Structure formats: C-alpha cells, structure tokens
Length: 57
Image (spheres, rainbow, N blue to C red):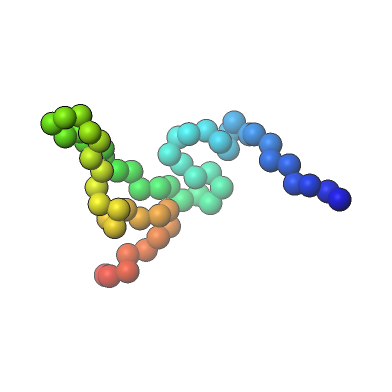
C-alpha cells in the first residue's frame, strides 16, 4: 500500500500572505490594541475567504 507523503517546499510554504496554489490572496485585516494592550480584531462577519464573493450586492 502506498501512502501520500507531504514534503515541505519552502517556495510554496513561505508565509507571505499569498496563496500560491490557487492564486487568490487573502484579505488583510488591521489589528489594533485597546488601552490595556489587548488585540482588537474587526468583526468576523466582515472578513472574507480568498475568492469569496459578497452575498449582498
């Protein structure tokens, strides 16, 4: 029986905010800190997956 092997490819696995497999780029979000230093993100519903279209136009 043959097993699939996952090999690390530094060109494909580079963390550069770019999806080199599908060609879609993810949406970047601005992170802010509140007065006590806690990270505050934008609401989850406002973020989109790469290639996702808006439901309401």
